[in-house]
Image 1 (cartoon, helix red, strand yellow):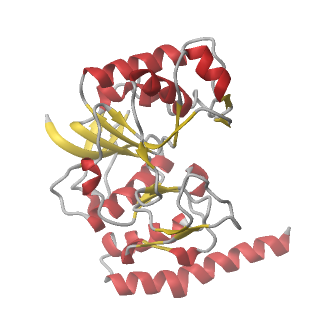
Image 2 (spheres, helix red, strand yellow):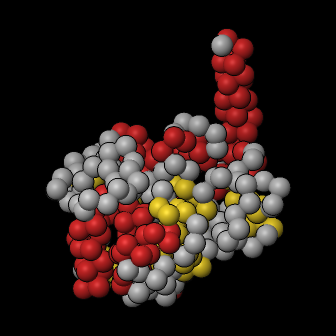
Length: 298
């Protein structure tokens, strides 16, 4: 078994396209010393510029629908130490050092919570019902998994919880992994890695496409009380290395612009400056003109 890897999971053309963009962003900011895997339930063809990716094809009973496959992390992870990144993410800098985060089994970026609500859970009620001292609030777009018995125990508990009669929040095709694994992690005594915004972020505080450019290591957000304030982050600017865009971002602003930059750079072998210029002076004006025209024709 290899010691370390990064990996994502992708099934279907849309998520394979997401995964190819994620892989290109990984390649841009790293050398090949830590392998990158795409896990899927059926074989797929890699674009010519991505032949370096490692594929892992696994049985459908492990790669279950929706996001519940994450309860099988103990069985599907490719390495002893594996970092999972959701396919609909892009990397904006070198993240090799993330393997240095303290971890004994399954690590997430977030915080402990005992009050309020999260993921359709009323926390005081949940703590009492499951006899746990806290909930771990986090986003399931990032996991750091070590293949050991404690991880197997956490995953087994999560599977049992997901099959219970408790009404957990659901996604389209499965129960949401976050509240289920949160409870399982809390039962194991896990402590999350504090979220400062500098490793992982979503696009809740996104304002303009000019904030992001993976070819120039640019990802800049501002945690301000004036705009979608995140109370757990320090106030002010932060620069995440991984951004999770979400499945609805496919072919949309801002994901599409960095996806195009990376494809022009790797697939079509344009120099970095030319790839960036093409996006700025050709693709962006066409994209925004098309959006404006759509609005006019409504």
